[in-house]
Amino acid sequence: MINIGCHLSISNGFEAVGKQALEIGANTFQFFTRNPRGGSARKIVQSDVDALIKIMNENNFSQIVAHAPYTMNLCSSKRETREFAYNTLTDDLKRMEYLPGNLYNFHPGSHTGQGVETGINQIINALNNAMTETMHTTVLLETMAGKGTEIGSRFEELREIINGVELKDKIGVCLDTCHVFDSGYDIVNDLEGVLSEFDRIIGIDKLKAVHLNDSMNYLGCHKDRHQKIGQGAIGYDAFKRIINNSYLKTLPFLLETPNELDGYAKEIRYLKNIYEI
Ligand code: FE
Ligand code: FE
Ligand code: ZN
Image (cartoon, rainbow, N blue to C red):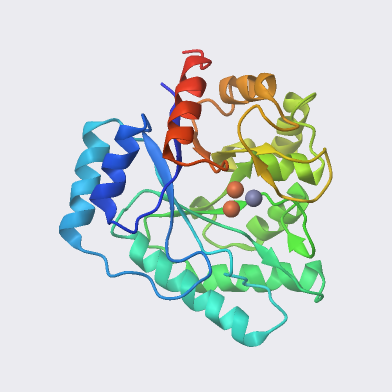
């Protein structure tokens, strides 16, 4: 069975989002831990979380993905921004313990002129201070498009971060199809080659989730503009190969396409149809 879902809002609580996922045919989903522009997170109600866990258990959900706010930049040149990001990360990881065994995805960050090496070291330090031996969450570095001074658009940069993280069994990668394509990895004509490069540099066992997005732009454009599945430069055939690839097919697939709920439901139906069991 394919593990497929999309980005959903938790503004009505966890039980509500579980029900919403079921309505659109999803068995996983992604949510922002807090407003994408940052700010404080809503209080977690234990009974609400328990209701979601019950829905997930009864409906064969795979792992779900919490996404850190976009503003969380652990390697900004501004100290206040870095501190804010570190506090967000620490708080998010504590809150993730309400939903043990799931995934926490974040954008490694933008070094804003400090240089890649400085940025990577700041990310490593923050992770080593925030992650704990007792936590039950796997932290995922998202592959990035390489917009501006973004870190993580090359597999080598992600490897360097992972190499510096002490708790190796609690760190992984989330592959975003739009981002890797925009970064220059040709998943349309050479998916096998890209994945063997990932394996050689990072190790395929570190790949824990996939963001399914088509791209509005061309290979290597470094733009990061998501498109609906099949309507961009990646195209239907490539998505059929992606979801059926032997390394990817058992991972949770999350749509972050420009859609309302009905559009997501349609894409989920389509992807289920072209998934080979
Ligand atoms: Fe993201
Ligand atoms: Fe993404
Ligand atoms: Zn994106």
